[in-house]
Image (tube, rainbow, N blue to C red; front, side, top):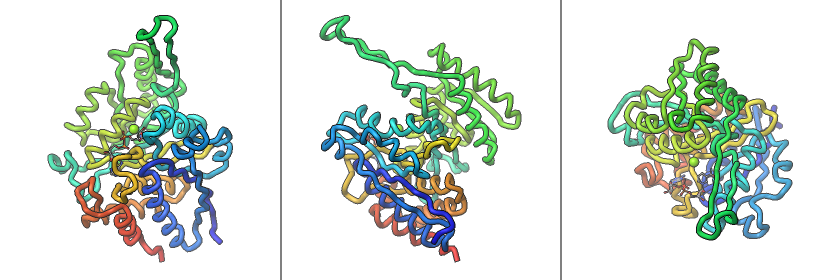
Amino acid sequence: TAEQTFRIACIPADGVGAEVVAAGRAVLDTVADRSAGRFALDWTEFPWGSAYHAEHGVMMPDDGLDRLRDFDAIYFGAVGWPTVPDHVSLWGLRLRICQGFDQWANVRPVTFLPGITGPLRAADDTELDWVVVRENSEGEYAGLGGRNLSARGPGGEVAVQSALFTEVGCERIFRFAFDLARTRARRKVSSVTKSNAQQYGMVLWDETFARVARDYPDVETESVLVDAMSAKFVLRPEELSVVVASNLHADILSDLGSALAGSLGLAASANLNPERRFPSMFEPVHGSAPDIAGRGVCNPVGAIGSAAMMLGHLGLPDEAKAINAAVEACTARGIRTRDVGGTAGTREVTEAVIAHLPGWT
Ligand code: NAI
Ligand code: MG
C-alpha cells in the first residue's frame, strides 16, 4: 500500500473531454505505479455533462458539489455540446464548480514546446515562457444582470450583464500573481486593464494593483490596456512573465497565448482554491472540440500538462516535472498530433509520453 493515496474526482464531460482525460489518467496512473509506493491515486468518475443533461434535465445533480467536496482534487475534461445551449452547460457544471469551491485563481501557462513551430517561434528564437493568472471568481463572469422584455415590448428586449470587482477579490489575485512571480526566473507582473473605458471596476483594479505592488518592491510591474496587451502577446512576448487579468480578459488572452505556442490543444490550466478549503480543479484550456471529437485525433498535451499541475498541487513537484519533460521529449522527436503539424493520434502521443517517463528506480 502507498504512503499517501489521493482521491481524485474525474469529470470527462463532453466531446474530446473524454479522450484527453483518458490520456491524462493513463499518464498519471503510470507515474503512480512507478512511484514505488510513494503515492497512489483513487479515481471516482462522474458521468456529468451534456449527455447527463439529456436524461436528467440538469448538467449535474443538485447535490453535485457536496459529492465532490471531500476529494483531494478534480480532474476535468471539457463541457459543451450542440444539444445544450453553451451558457447552460458552462454555468451548470464548470462555473458552478469554480465558483462553488471558490477556485478564485486560474493559472494558465503558455508553454512553447521543442519541435513545435508556433507563429512566434518562426519569427523569434528568444526563450518564450509566460503564465496567465486569471481572476476566476468575479469580474465579467459574476453572473450579475437580467433581461427585460416587458418594459419595451417585443423586439425591444434589453439585457444587462454587469461586471463585479471587489477590493478583496482584486487584492488576493494580485498577491497570488506577485508570489508566483517570485518563483520565476523573471520577476515581473503585468496587469491587464481597461480603465480608460471602464471607469469603475477597472479603476478599482488598477488602484489595488498599485497598492499591492508596493509590498513587492523586488518585482517589476507594468499595467497594460487589454487591447495593447493582445498586440504585445504577438509582438513583444519575450517581455512577459506573469500576466494577471480579469476573468474575461484572461479567458481571451490565454487562448491567444496557446494559439501562439502552436495550438489550443497544448494549454494546461489549474483552477485553484489557494486556501485549500475546497478541492481545486485541473483541466485543459480548450473546449469540447465537437468538430474533431470521437476520432482519436485530438491533442492530449494540454490535459497531460494539467495532470502534471495537479501532481504539483498535491505536493509531488518532481513527478510533475517528469511528466512535462516526457512531453517535451515527444514533441522534440516529432511525435505530435495534427493540430501541431504531426500525424500521430491521441493514443500514439499518450503512449509515447508514457514511454518517455522515467522508471523512478
Ligand atoms: P474548442 O476549444 O472546443 O475548439 C476550438 C478549436 O480548437 C476547434 O477547431 C478545435 O478542433 C480545436 N481544438 C480544441 N481542443 C483541441 C485539442 N485538444 N486538440 C486539437 N485541436 C483542438 O472551442 P469552441 O469550438 O469555441 O467550443 C466548443 C464547445 O466547448 C462549446 O460548447 C463551448 O462552450 C465549450 N467550451 C468549454 C470550455 C471548458 O469546458 N473549459 C472552454 C471553451 C469552450
Ligand atoms: Mg476560454
